[in-house]
Length: 319
Ligand code: ADP
Image (cartoon, rainbow, N blue to C red; front, top):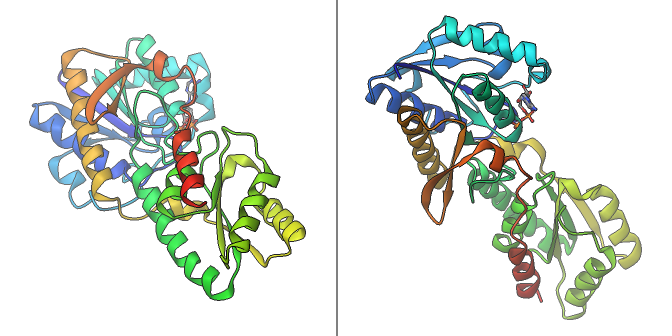
């Protein structure tokens, strides 16, 4: 293999730049030419392709966002559009493609692999919802952003003796909520994997108040439903001063944590090695601190579910 390309696609994660840097540097280290494709699959179709040099990825390891920009591309669901994408890649003599993104982006890379354009995936999603890895890049950074916010909200919750419902990201996978619940000392967490039991939640808050607790923090994944409505129900039933904070897109940005930067560097490096070894159609991942890889088909069988033992731990510790 002489020439590869890399793109970032789908929802952004704070670590895409660090992974991009690792791919470009490792490819050049291995004597490959490497091209960057702007705006994901949409930019590929528009031939927004440029040669990357060592300096192209200088000074980005600590920056959030993605230097290549990211986009969604609905057209890519059409087989003839994907065939055109392969033609374009071949026109540039590109022999392999590394896709940094979530499960949707993997599906695109899988289809390109089937058409003879070898693809490798790097899991980048703050929701941590793809299979084949215990952690996706961006998750740790997003989690730390959430913890910083919870700590600040806890100060005001305490001063005013309020109950706070905090909505965090996580459409199908409640990992951010579960980890934030434990690390942020929440009363309880509500995640999409488990049916919501508002009465049990209210009971927990009341028990806390009865033993003298003046403030409570409830973490809700966005996939659970309407956090404002949950806050209203708590207020109506308990009568406690209840506020709702939706953290939103602040969770997608910011300077990546050291853990995430190391993970992104390991993933980027392994992705290039896999292409060089001729092992295509795989995603890289980390399991028990070992870098592993898995076929796209297996990684796409279902969404990864969150670790429910953390929700139990959160409940136990907030007794
Ligand atoms: P993410 O990668 O973060 O999960 P999306 O689900 O939006 O984000 O997917 C990103 C892009 O991947 C889509 O805009 C589309 O271009 C491509 N894609 C998603 N699903 C498929 C599919 N089934 N076949 C081909 N391409 C797909």
